[in-house]
Image (cartoon, rainbow, N blue to C red):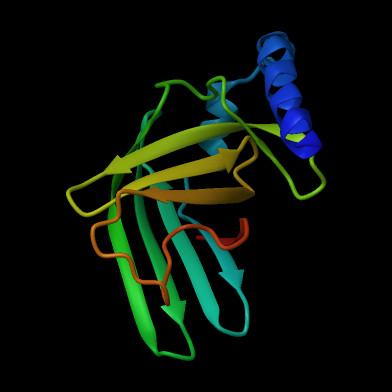
Length: 158
């Protein structure tokens, strides 16, 4: 119960301080665009699973992506690709995530919706890591999940 209260308190504090913090950042969308002009690749690897997200920014509001989840033990693969749109139509909304140390950071969120699945891509401001969240998946595959098992880290760009 105390962890729940702490979590709720952190969220409330975040909503109080994030708007003023975001204004202090002087976020420059041209700087973000230059960071993501090339194709970026994000990876997570373990002994059983390899998850890869490849994306290229189309414009300030859309990305072209391919998300792949490969299970080495079962030799199964699941792949989704398409165009995801910025949830807030701006570089950063009022969304935030927590890293493994419990520290908050601002995210830019892109949403992909199809008849098969709903995906949320939550990038940090430097486009160095991403969390993928999944909802309403019509045919979930427990061996090749589309959601992030752990944060996917930038592994290369081209």
